[in-house]
Image (cartoon, rainbow, N blue to C red; front, top):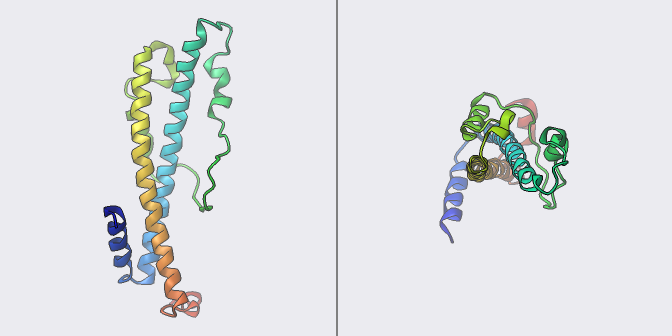
Length: 176
């Protein structure tokens, strides 16, 4: 057994001592935090896509000076292609995060690079910004996955209790 599964088992084991309402609160909080991190990931991906498109435009500019400018291409740059990865569906609250923290975090990662004036920045600056954003996106993805596991573990424990008779649907419906 590896260290991550041992830690996961210990975390899951700790859930068995909690009440149903505590499990529901932990699950709700994990889902809310995951939604906030999902928003941050979308911000990071959008910015990385714009920076990469500008780098590509610069690379091709000498061969194709008539190429459409970056602003004209934004709708296609920011369009999401369907994912080729099939995962179980998750209900996720959409919209801006509960606070401004994630917007500020994404802005700080851009450093001195401002999206409104990419032409004023050297290619090296844009490459460095892409690298910073990429590294941070990986970290955010790891945090999101941990929150998804926490929510799933809470759901599994709640389900187990109902299945094994430790909790009753009648209590849920009566608000007990």
